[in-house]
Image (cartoon, rainbow, N blue to C red; front, side, top):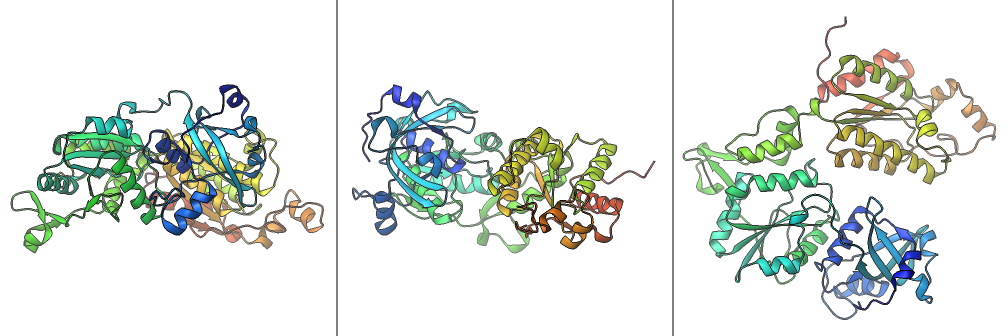
Length: 509
């Protein structure tokens, strides 16, 4: 890709704007800071084809995976590559602030309503926003800070407990290398931790590791382990890493040597971590799994000191409090007339009686009137409706409240996005499928919607001429055909109590 830039500022002021998806925003930041060098922008079709066939860009530079940008087809139609005044696109961050300008060199159709665009990017503004800016140094800045010789890179995508710290210390001694800790902050964290909490937990372990340089890297996973590993190796090399310590499925690449550590275990004879096979079975204690760590935190139990340094444990307990003190989104989905709104109101009343946390009910009809007025009932509008509800509920839960939602939410993808929003906010998400059969819902047709749809007077009615995608990931399934409202509410409360989201109820007054 060319490093040239010809678009004047007056063209950019008139250019259309677009907010890329989170993974694309992370790629954009890596492009802007030079971590994807020699790439200077999102790939064109020619580069994509070349990478997929040969693992190289068109200019024969080795490159592992695609780095792409997708936009709505309606936006792509506004671009004209033959007109210098209409080939610019301003890319904004998630809050709508201009982040970069894209000089579009290629546009192509991907599928209905979606297009791909490629071209060179240039930063707009200083780009300084978000927490821990002092750690967001460019690869060039980090390389200038590193001492000569070997550099051991560690991608700290999870908190560092004693077994990981022991592996790091051993690798540093073996290589006589300087340590570079790279903390991914381009996504919403792992293990239920937001990026800021991950950074704090890594800093809390700093006194337990060899002298190190720490850097926050805007890396976002692609949910493809091979692509992740190849890109991580490429980015690590850009930051000056010569050897990479594997923390999972890691492949060699970009000229790096990858170290795969042996499994350590705790030796209760002297409190040291050693290679597992060097410890007699009776004296061996294996490291806790991620699921075990999360379970202890969810139930409010302290992490054992033999496994986790106290300072790290303190940060984790702050970031992931017990479920009974954490925010929660309860998302009820089902056909119109299934009883979801009635159950949601009863649930909200019961939780308000307990007074543990603030409770907000986001009822479908009220939301349509106050939050999403003007939206129709097309698939796109319905997805937008659910996305807005999910965002508001996640913000309620971010501040340790309980958000109860009860839209029809007929499409699985929109429900999945609502779950992701809650998890990204550090909250819980409980999906309740109110699976009352269609024939029962039709008999309860107080609004006459089903009758009108059957008569052809109403189109787009979920369950009649528009599909309802039944959840396969529901945490609780209710059929209210033969349940009273109180019985249905009690089943939801029982599930929330059994899973630790609410305290057991007090005896009735």
